[in-house]
Length: 269
Ligand SMILES: [Fe+2]
Image 1: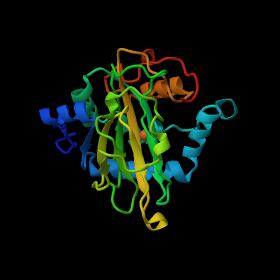
Image 2: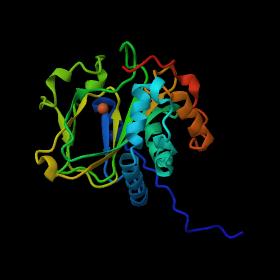
Image 3: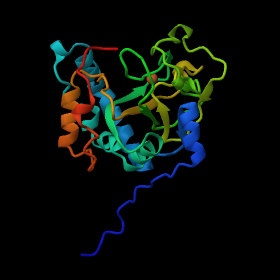
Image 4: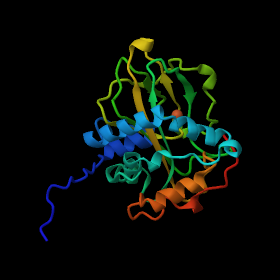
């Protein structure tokens, strides 16, 4: 049989030693235009559906009040492109280079944020209760499907703060204020990805233009290094992992959706 030579080849990205070292020291890595255009376009269409059909709200309701709402009718990873993103080989390859080859998927969020979306105060997202150490890596991959610009909120990060052991909201009283040493990420081309150590303090700083700006398409997928038990953030986390396995999203990586890397769900952090 003649091989189909038109099949797209997924690009892998070999990080330089300097990039890997910067990630270890600073806690983040910016990958402009990392996602293939066609994947970003499909993700955008799915994010529109996710928001416009109320699926996002239903998934939030199932997290906030699972007794009343039960399982969400659809989860992010059940949308075809979102499911593809979770196991996108170039992405997993980057993760392997910064935290080693053994990690498990933690969760996925998708949103289309309005131009007047409020800021999100300084916080981190490292899941550990209580916060005691940083012995294992947890990484959030932040995907800006339409990029970032002056007409969208910016991502601001505090380089090196992932090395502190602190509560998620230890800097929350500062709101989204400018902090000494911060790095502002406010110009990115479409399909860009920021690889963020989950313990790195970061904030969403609103655009100045309010409603005159544009929507901000934002998908985040997080992953945890294996070797410890991680607290889940969704009450239906077992269902989520089971569906991911059933859909074959692991692409031959048996640990990617393995339940044994998690503690029981005990409620919101
Ligand atoms: Fe965050």
